[in-house]
Image (cartoon, rainbow, N blue to C red):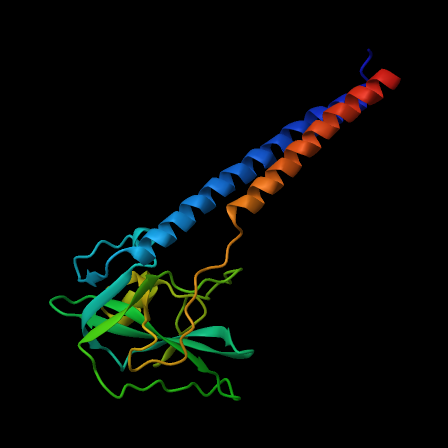
Length: 233
């Protein structure tokens, strides 16, 4: 059996790529299994009492129920722009909640509010009360597909508008440290807006495994086709 140079080079280049893609999909499937396990564990865990001494591990704490004691800083609120609900564009309202016994805060996502027709006129999220206790669940800040330069820089004045929430930048703007995660306020809690919290929709592990089988199948087909072609030649 004589091997042609060009087909052989093509197979030698493509075969490692196809096999690598298959193993990459298997690795992604394992990551998704770990993600769903963490999500389930966090939602089933007992409620956590958040204090200034709580570790800042946003991944380990994600989806955990949480209670916090302190007071809102209603004069310094943050609006996360370009949030859609019910087909309308608006903002998520993040209000700093300064914890008792410590100069540290957590940003509480009080929900979604619509944008004004004139985008230059910002909504003014108000606080009727100043509760000493909030309850909710811990989550990452809302993310975007493509982060543009300056998207994490808050606008001048209050409320400040950002496209992407960065805890370090917001801490510097507020003048006190904030946790690198937010609390999604309970739907039954007062002082909230539209709240439709949901888990992140991600591709299930089974789909990654199916893609891996496809890549391995293509690799096998390439080898068989190459052997058949070489035999014919």
